[in-house]
Image (cartoon, rainbow, N blue to C red):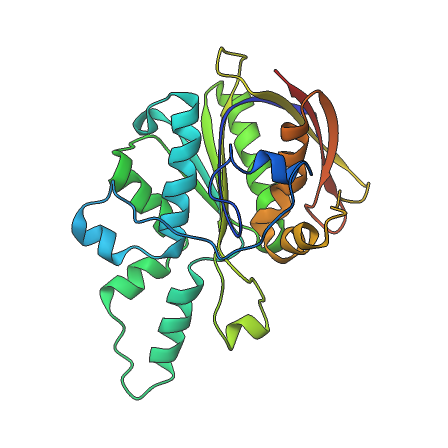
Length: 265
């Protein structure tokens, strides 16, 4: 595939030990120690009260990280196309539905059902922000971050438009956790643009490679990167946080990874 270039104008981050992007940069680039902690999911204040009560972890993740990235870029969320990517969906909701189906009372509530579809976060996003721009929703298992990044950068290049890219994952309770051991919720968001602007933080150019993915010497950070598919973004975030010119290799497929050249602006 040809190399694809986009300009990052805003970043959002939420995960174990990470509450936002500005406070996380020093940890990710190794200047401060990583202190793991349970992900804190803020209530989605932009949603109407009824939708706020019904929202699950993946919706709260998407809104928190996506809105952080858009605010950093100084843009209006309502006007921006979105690419959502996740390895699965809302793990807690999936667990609750499986429990109901395994019980004598197999009546699933409409709220449980509509939160079970893979594009639920995109729907809540449009309600919260008033967005009428197109949204693309991907499910790619362990390749979710790489697949979503390729889709988002391709849209930026082909459509010559800004795109918000958001990758997120949530944990599964037992017994699902025993076969899909995602330990906590994690989300990252980027505002990507086709040209450099006053808000540009970094330039990224992505292509395929057969090189092995970058890893962390910090065992806790490496465990996080390996355990949560959306957290495969961490080497890219480290490249951005370090500044200058950085070459990063990200997990994607068994047969191909993503080589990303990062240039700070």
